[in-house]
Length: 318
Image (cartoon, rainbow, N blue to C red; front, side, top):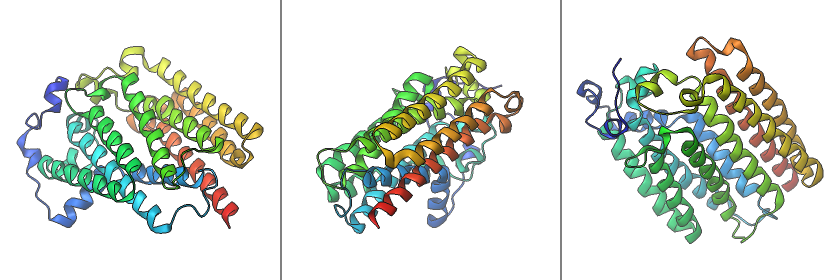
């Protein structure tokens, strides 16, 4: 099996030229870039942003619909830039893992993807500048840590702990960006606890669970993920423990200080049981498809939690 160093993987000339010959039209290129950026990720990022706006203390009436749409657009542009760059850099291990994403399949050239990365980043920064100085700051930091996650000389994705730290910070920045739309300098406890717990859910549950199904490609790429360094069983136990801990913290906070989060906390609790059961089950070993199930449960749970939060916010506003 072919292997490569992180420096090789960061180089656009590392991959065979036959994967860099696709030349679709502009509309198709943009569609492929969106697919490479993972639509499910773009959706949950939008929900996090809207949660930050909706849970901001006394947020009702503080932001306009146009401002909210503009803010979501800015953050999605930044997210496309970050995840599309990751798709370019991860092309080799994605092929080893049998990924169906456009770059791995040779449907989207690295050159076109990089051009969209740059364009998306520029659109994000220009849009942020039109909203507020605070948005410029958080967008710039978001883009910077997104680059550090995948790009040289940092390539923080190579190890689980730095990768999880980036994921957590990215989550916190997304909630912060949403909160900035209200124009307030402080936020209430509901948003604070939600942002902390759900960012921890991303870093300590999702980031580790994702590695369970990508071992072959990660090893071929020279990555030192938790599964490779600590062993699969320990990572599965860590995923289960992290899921239960996040649910417990949010449930206690909801019952004692933020009653509006009771329903989301219950959803997170049920989801944590699902993640734990799948992570510790022997059924999710032996194939990449089954090993992916804990991560899928993680993703479905966080979507359901944020939908529950936004429904509660809308009911309160209406």
